Image (tube, rainbow, N blue to C red; front, side, top):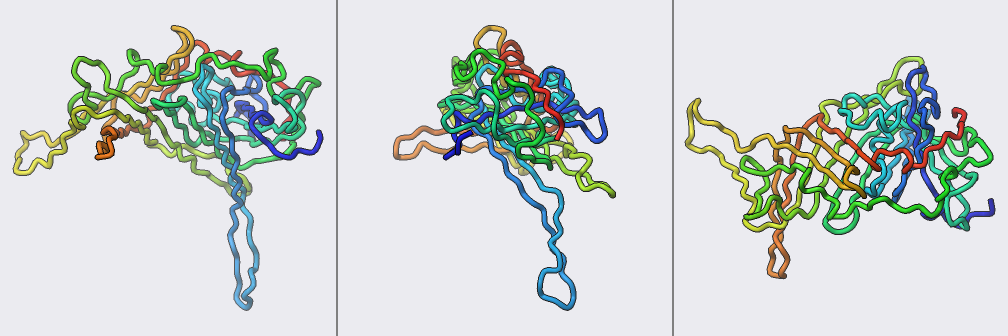
Length: 373
């Protein structure tokens, strides 16, 4: 490869390979029968490496005695447009069975699964990330740490994931085969088209369930079945605390810190205030009084694809409660009042994909026979 002057979007690509945990230590880059996933619609990818250092000093000298190094902390962030292809969450959480292993499963069922991440860098004169990759970085044994889905009224719906781990290698392993490389198995490499970009009209109002009604629900305007929604955001942070052991440098496990908080946020155009009662129950005493402002609410978000059987569903169950409501805007400058309702539940986060949202053909799977790191 000729000398690169820069790296930009057309000359880099990512790949994800679900990891098998059936061996001890785990065998990186093997185990998923479907091989590598090359997700489509990726907008950005970032890698942060932090080296954990602990200082040791001693009596009798001011100079540092030793700067002890622990295992590095690797964090990978990926942003993807919701485009009718499988979401990153399913690729990262399926374990050795890949997307089918995560589709429609509860969060606790997927807590132990890991994924391998690869970023390939091509020549800055390439028009697409195709062919043999000259430079790449592998991050092995990564755990999904957080995920967020955002559906705005303006722009594209997006998904953000964060992966955490302790291994990063540049140009490691073997990218096998004469035709190996990112997107190398697809005839449309470099000229791909999204099945269905997620825009505001792809929010499925008839199938989605938003928290409405009394007890901390979102009010519905007269003669309508849905508020004037401006944005919906669903997110969760799994924590991922490391467990170490004597006799080994690397942690043997990064566990999900249950209970896991799951949040959802709905912004609407206000038409008659937030309609949320916040009573202090002053003067009311006795066992027959129900001291309760809020009720449990169901939340389910559904995004359409390119056909009637193509959808992405995010189910937060039926025990979501309002944590805050923010009424703002309507200022003298002429803007509209917007009201944001924030809800909270725990441990309930299930992503179900159908049609193109779970079809392997849309994510460019090949098995390029990578040998461990």
